[in-house]
Amino acid sequence: MKRILFFALICAMTALGACRTSNEKLSDGSVLVNGVPWYDIDGTVVNSHGSCIVKDGGRYWLFGEYKSDTTNAFSGFVCYSSSNLIDWRFERVVLPVQPDGLMGSNRVGERVKVMHCKKTRKYVMFMHSDDMGYMDPHTCVAIADSINGVYDFIGPLTYHGEPIHKWDIGTFQDQDGTGYLLAHHGPIYRLSDDYLTADTLYLDPELAHSGESPALFRHRDTYFIMYSNLTSWERNDNFYFTSKNIAGPWKRQGLFCPEGTMTYNSQCTYVYPIINGDDTTFIYLGDRWSYPHQATSATQVWLPLTVEGESLSIPEFWEAWNPAARKPEDMTRTTEKVGGLWKSNEAGKQYSIPFKGRQALIYGHSDKHGGYARITITNSKGEEYLNTLVDFYSLVPHDGLLYVSPVLPEDHYTLTIAVNGDHTEFYNKKGNRFGSDDYWVIVTEIRRK
Image (cartoon, rainbow, N blue to C red):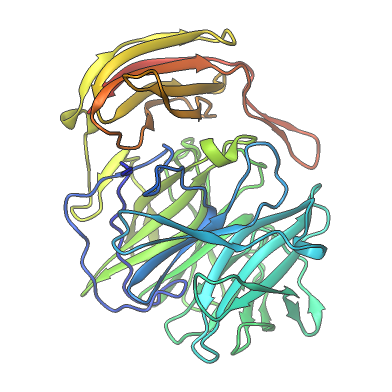
């Protein structure tokens, strides 16, 4: 089965992470769709969150959290690969749940990042480990000889012999190969030559109490670092700082998305550079969390950043866009409408529509009253081809594309949308509740291809 969401983001050189290729072109004709589940070449949802991308050996490797739909306990870190960033192949769970200890069962494992160490030729993985209540944070490290091999868990990353007790980590690899660990509320640790310990700590007062989920990149002689506010799984207006030196001083610059959009309903996790000669495009990688059904319903928001001097912005949200042309795409131009408005908040209530073709697209309205919808597709023989969940919740109201099926064999199908009767609901450490207050599923249009 072929997937419908196409990526065409080609890495060029090491401005972030372990990308080391100096000049590659984007492939034409590909469309990246934001805020919908993505499918791998086997037709399974790409389950990779808090992620990073590494270029190695002529392939592109996506690492992320391998989420569950029922628990936040650590389920492993996963790796996908692609020869063209269009068709993703599931490789394996590269760091499975350990028998015990910091990455054992009933622990949290998040924010996996991988860099290639030129000195040791090892692939080094960094992660945030915690207990289920987020009261025992550790930054940990693992290593492997091959990028898609099973990583050997070493233990806590240390600074001057002491474990680093930080969460929501990020990494950055500078143009000279120096590696850095980023942590919540501003600390930046310079790593040793083998990346297995931290040897220097930069604490800039401007970054103190800044936020979490840091993502750092360099454009020419300026460093940019993004943070998210602390709102649990909820979205918020992310912000950024700039500096001419990674050690500081750092200057707070403000938001990089329009205020009130909650960073287009996402949280920053990584910045991916595409360098083609003198032309560089930086791609914002953000997570659109969907607790508790993270495996099937959490999605991604990837958008090009506009960088001018010390100014950083994503001026508008592109639902679908062509990375080669760097312009938005209208999905309705290549699809046909087959269904219209339907809405309900009654558990079990459903809406079915027949269609002939190979794909189904669902447009809808999401807001703070939205819940989960159960989506099923059956073929002409009545066989269930697909059964999944789609989240109709967003803190900021949004109208647009919420689901695109994998590419199906040409046939007559029936698409059924049902109110699942549950919704996002989560709490922060202070006990503050976030999430939906109802179960509405509002479909505005169904299209087929």
